[in-house]
Image (cartoon, rainbow, N blue to C red; front, side, top):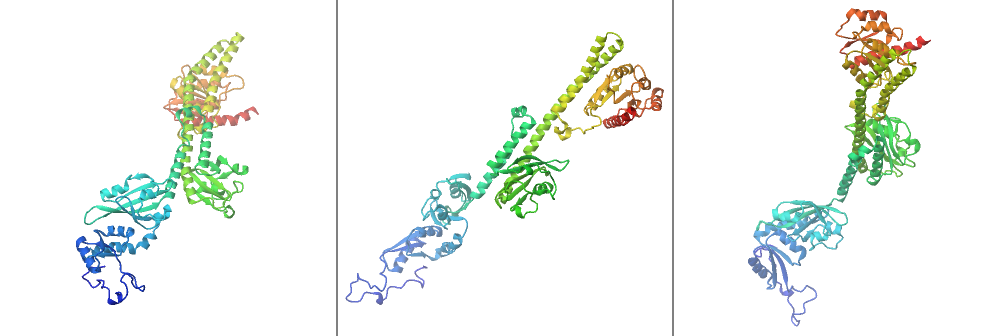
Length: 610
């Protein structure tokens, strides 16, 4: 209704609406409604002027005028009060259009997936689009406290008083609520500022049900936490467990997390051998025996889904195995499967496969969850490998340190024993036997240390950076190094024994002759490295004295800076010498030379025997 001075002013009742003669005015005609005895009008405008105008307009002294100063307040009262009309004077008419538009668009708001409510300063709902009523199951939410409607939920933040903040600051605020039935809501409160007062008197609050999103985040967090705890071992546990015990513990943790957190019962994990490309079983639960032992390689053809995933590094969701050409039977009565790669630094190190007896049992969410778990699992496996490698490397270093410490002293025992034996040849048989026993025991000491080192720290268990490239030709071969220089003899032990050679040393030529003579029946040196200049003779002289005991082809002369007194190298070559090392030589040169001599000797020995 506009200003009463306008043309829309209501007309007074006509004579036709008056009572006819003879009729009591208290008994109106039944053909029309009785004139209202009390009018209640919602007015936007000046209270005093509006009241007078409205009474004059309706010619009724009992017009109740409810005056408001803002359209939002008018809308709030309209939802709760019983009004006969809405009045706005000329000044307020433009502002009165806002609630009109809001009412006009109510159907749009009702169609929104989010709840929308209008709250006053006491958090009372004065309007809503129906979603809150739908979620709470209440017949009506108007006039009810917002928090009470949701069962006084826990406010999770980030703002723990979102409505108070919005009213106090005049700026929007948001937070997350959790109800007792584990339903999560995200609320956003936007204040409506009153033009006259400049204060926020109402809030437009949107409510969204984010339960699925929150539960998914919680599951992701639980999966990540489970993955972190897979290889979470204390220092004491690491010290007390060997490698296999750690692997068994990791398997137990993987199985527990897979069944309890991911809810998967059929599990198969394979590790990729980077050298051969084979996929070696690590863990299998619920798989058929022939599937567990099946040989698979990282290939996108003829190796099932597991081989395809290992070759491509991509996850594979098989919704119906009967229609999937890649699938190879794994679990009994399986109908669908999900396989993801184990990735570490963008490199595939294995595969993680789960299967189900139901068709289309796995979703994209399951794929996401399993990929998250697989990343943490890859890190746990890598940590386990690093722990094993660290332990093996430490053990190897310890064994090498012990071996290095006892190598020269044992050589001294051997040197002293053979010197004594040379003097007691033909005398005191018991003494000679004891000396032979000393030689055997001294040599056994080195071999025992070497075997213990191999059992404590196998080469394949060491870290990649500390692994030694195997030289199987040198393993177990006996090498004699003859040099006056202590550093050369010590270096020979360090360099050759790491490749499993049995190294013995001598200070001079005579000592070398004694070592060869007393090596024992059935034993010989596979290679003899001799310095060209010894304290008691030259390298060539030693060669000539050993001709009757050894194959000259096993000897290697060593010289520094091409030094060759008396043309020893020339003469030795004429006598059958095959190899010369020039000091200072590199490790690869030493290995290559010794390996060549050993190989040649092995090929020549059967021919010599025949």
